[in-house]
Length: 118
Image (cartoon, rainbow, N blue to C red; front, top):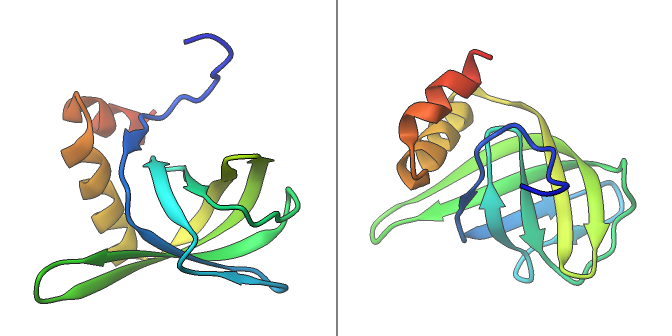
């Protein structure tokens, strides 16, 4: 585990992300690389200062429909690969869909349930 102090299960999940701040909006260049119930990392060349509040739209698209999770967050870290975002709040539907994304992509889905109540 090394220096990684995260307590939540992260899963690899690639999808389109729209990130909006008061000063910029990132669309096509932003792709998620991993996600958890508490945050995500998006690959982008865009530089946004740590601590900047943001609105995140995680776009899920199927063959016949499109669904977007809407989440409020803050830029938690920035490096040459992209941006780490911590989630602050989300609506109930987004929470439900996020939970399913993490659970269905986790190597041990039971861990997700335990984390949510710890």
